[in-house]
Length: 398
Ligand code: FDA
Image 1 (cartoon, rainbow, N blue to C red):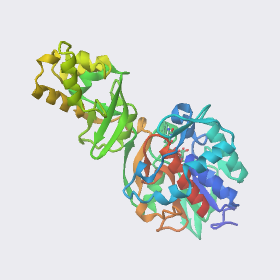
Image 2: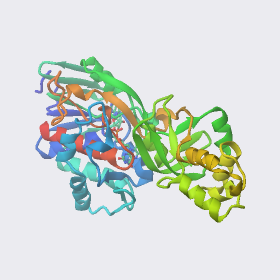
Image 3: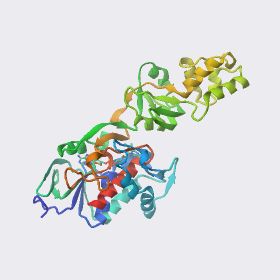
Image 4: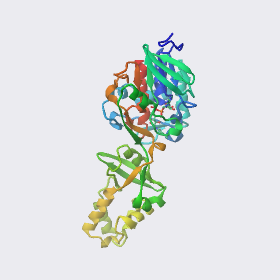
């Protein structure tokens, strides 16, 4: 009999069959631990399936602690160092899953993200992991030396409970606030949560001036505070998206100053002067259209820049134009929220968790891994790497 009297002799119950939960379960299972995964959705790994446009950007070869946001930037170091991108690539190779590098160390399956989920499930099967899907949790009790989880499928008990229930993004995929509520119930602090890696919305004049350019992609360097990302911005019907915007969105809070360098890597003033010398009769919009999408260049000249032949622009005006091009102010009104966000920022405060085992310092036997914890990666495979690394650290400790 397990603690509490339920006839379920498990060493650990993992709540949530996502990336982190499955990695933890397979690691512990293969170490001989009896593990149960309780998933309330009708199948495990839904986010894995939809990730990377169906090809799962399963890691990033350049992942370092600097690619993560957290109130304690040191917390993720230990787990990331002990389970690296190379470790996950070795697992992928062992399962003969073909992959390719897209850009900046981002690795994707050649074929389908289903292969990554298959890998995790096969490894769980090797470890004798039991997985219960469509298994809603009604109540969790702690006492008699263990955790007692009352579910739609009956009561399960174990001396360890691993919370791997993820964040709040994409509620239609099974996201819930379960982990945060449970953490609070056990006395843990939960840092304020908000949508990350999310499109930004525009309002008022900005929205009116740009809405009909939806679909236009502009290479930019997006700046917010000390963070900056060079990549594409995609104009949408409601605002802006694309990798540069998704990345900077995680650093942006309502009201923050957001600026876009529209000629990233270039000295805008020197370039404008050279253009004036070489093609003085050309209008600014024509000159800009060589570096920016034509319709976007035109729109800039209708609302933000003087549209005149280059030779009519004196040095002071060129300096002003260069200033706008180097730091175009984008006034975002908000984000699209959890409906489209890839991740949830904030979460269970790491201050009361062990960075080597992910165990609660308040409640022995209670663990938090993956996105529910206040560790959030950049776009590009970093979030799965955190899920694998934190899941592995915990699975080794159970
Ligand atoms: P995850 O959310 O994966 O799993 C949590 C599980 O817990 C879910 O199965 C959920 O149903 C379950 N659950 C929740 N509440 C429960 C409850 N009360 N009882 C039981 N079960 C419960 N990252 C990346 O690195 N590369 C990529 O390509 C992408 N692509 C991507 C696309 C999209 C559209 C999204 C939304 C996200 C990504 N991400 C990503 C982010 C990545 O998917 C995310 O960071 C990880 O899945 C987090 O793993 P977790 O296991 O922590 O949570």
